[in-house]
Length: 376
Length: 242
Image 1: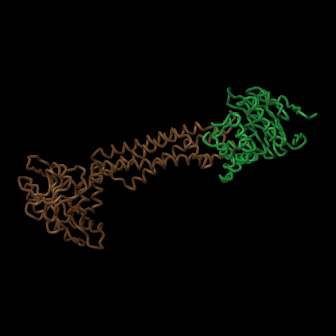
Image 2: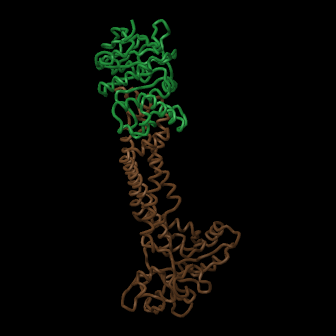
Image 3: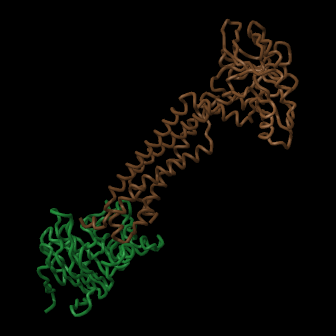
């Protein structure tokens, strides 16, 4: 009877297309919004992922990576002394204003890396040599800084600008993950970074550390917390802490959640209603099948097969369209769009729920259907 | 070859004291008020009577697609009214064929596919079911229309497809509800000739509900159902019989 069910489904082309459009729209909306939402979350913790170090140590009251709470310079040595720590280096991170030669001001995030190792440096360089930041007055920019500060004609390797009235010369352009706030990032050495900023009692933002081989990162992080009294997080913990802060303190979660829920409800409403109409219009045919000996179970199978066939087709088309949207809009980092298998799995589960709900309404109708309807 | 119906042999369908009401309280209407009826193998029984007299309700009850309030119905010795719903559905699929006033063909299936449906319900393989369906369509004179959709067939042809569908499972009881009501005179006569041929098979019987007096002569017996009661059963004199 699967053959008959599918012919009934595809035979009513208008309703099939309406069902398909409804489910495709729902899937596309959920995947698109979900991917943008997750892309934004990835952006919100890009300051952590861009540096790619396993342990972050800072003030224990820190809420998220962009909220810098400077700690004493001695923290570096205290972390180094914790058993299981292979290395620990200082990191400066702070906001500053850059003044270009054309007179324009731009707020930037100044990142100071430990000069002997340059730990935390971006992995990929688009222009110049990152190691050249060891030269006098040298800095490196991320590619978003180039974009935000006027484009490659204004800012390039060799460009000179001012940071707090001090000279900064661009020696490299690095490729990084775009950040949530999209504030340009300027990299230099830790020592030069603290010379750029106004004098403060405490300048150390973070201590970056790595556990010795064979020692679990969670264990070393726990020891650092215990022995120094500082806040120590694995990069994954710190990323989630940051994401969690963004979700709690901005309307992003609610906004995207509402849209995703809307997609789910609209999909369910369109699919449920159209499918129910499809069943009601074929009620005499279903009654005839029942009279001819088709059990309620057989009819239920037919309905489920129809629902899941159109559902899975809509799933494929919806994901295809959402991916195409992501491909076209997220190219070059224009839009945060991160499509993960977990999201696709969740959408599949949501879609199966929609299909099951739609099919159930029809199955209940058919279960109650008296085949005697065919004689009326 | 006519297998004459014989009142002395055990009835293929035996209905006793059938009562069926619809609604409750003041709005309750009793449609069948104690029906006794026998249908024998090799006969075509016509069920006639005024509209609202209970013909279709009785037909549905005999088919086991409508629960009755009182009475017993045995079909080929099986007590249909006490059979669990699932077994009744299976029994119906194996024993009965249906022909409806509005044909009830699936519009998206070809004639052959429509005819194959009862076999597919019985879990026959699709190629085998379609093969048997085409043979059956040949028998009703529509072998060359096997791949046509119902919308491309005339009313008479659609009803012949419905008959082929009803017969493809080789049912022993054929139940027909106003099979000629949607057809013109000549087409109605052709359909009834086909049904009479089926009814005269010695191991089958046919029950036809009809208002159409032009086809009364195709029946072997005619039961008149009025106001929920059978008010008379008469044997119809056939051409060529004494």
